[in-house]
Length: 178
Picture (cartoon, rainbow, N blue to C red):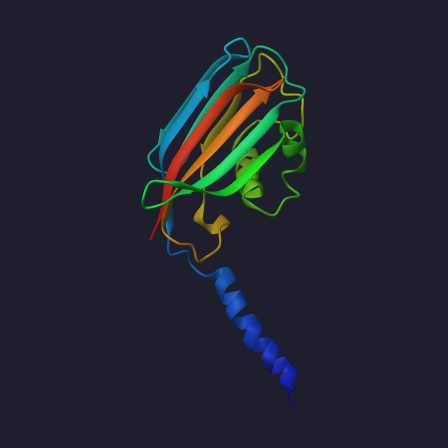
């Protein structure tokens, strides 16, 4: 005999499992990458490039080691009237973000997991001086996001500061399209 509770559980679990394995009906395209360095006494060199609409390359060398730094990140949806609607905002110590990024279950985890996969950036401070750090072939993969996602344009902004002074800013603009 079958239990009515088992049947109800099966009815609930099957659609959930299908959603987990569903093919994504969207793509993530990046169309602007801009990094500006405000303090050349900290950053000896910085190079970046967006290849096509998917792949980011970045390398940098610091003039002094960073034992702590501020990290601000925000993600905005760009509405049809070109106004930004904030979806995600974070202001934290950068070293804490490096150490605990694998604990978080959100957008930050997705980004840091990909950064650590394709870079030589350490998972904890300090970030050493006179060493070339790189992020090579960073990609926002559709499979890292929920299977159902609306079409939208977005802007991600990342600010790095030392002693409360802004040292570098990165802006990534992109779109999710069906």
